[in-house]
Length: 317
Image: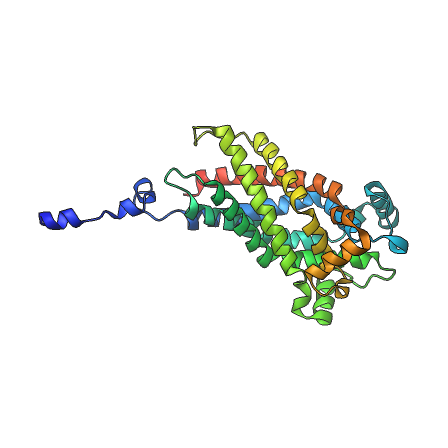
């Protein structure tokens, strides 16, 4: 190569600084994504078995309307009446639906986050403020479309069915078959728009708060390990932030997925009718049980997930 050619040569490393720190290999979005899918799936199955009763109570309270149709006077009354009428395991009604869905949901969430993160980190492996929000948002949208909407729709219809005098669903397969027979495949995709809004904002808030707290703890030492109990505490804070940030969306989503969803024209109509008929307070129905469930859920989830990722990063090269 002559001097003129050397002078005009532009190194590919100059426009792609990550190449200097990865041995000229592409960002590890793909490999991290696969680990995230496996670790996330395992995490989802364990977590839902621990926290489901709080999800059940939250959904019952959100489905409860004012007036003659009101059934429960708070969390304790809901638990008491459910146990009296259905036994203790009545609090686990619909668990199979969430168990079938939680594994792919968590797998999609963490797999998407790790994949997006692998392509968004800077030369030091760090995410910017916008990067944390966008990667979390992407993870939430991905899980909403692939797993959460059908899972949540079926779950809400199952719980709603139990509230009727003569429940129709005899089990998971029978219930799903009845829903599809009556409403078609779209019957398990009710509330897609509010679910995308809810899950997108949920994960944007959670991952942003968690990653920011981790970065704050690490300070200038980016390789400093974060103790798992502290990861759990950070997760609980992130979960609480997401609850206060998007419970109104969760209430609208639940109403849009219930057996009486046909009385709402769309998401906006549902929100307006709730506001008109029940007031602003209705948008925060189920906040307390949701707060308890989500804080525990997110704390457990991130602790388990971090543990599996540490293991995979050691044995899975």
